[in-house]
Image (cartoon, rainbow, N blue to C red):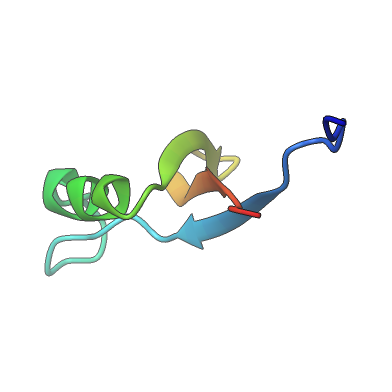
Length: 64
């Protein structure tokens, strides 16, 4: 008998890295690759009303 359970997910919110001035974003490539290696997938960004990214949102499927 097969299980018809829906997949379960977990989420992570990460603040994008910033340069020393805290006003400009640093290149997030290294951090994104680290998260990807751990099974996380970038699915959305949350931005401030006036512009700029506040959070990077990731998800990964929970293993049963």
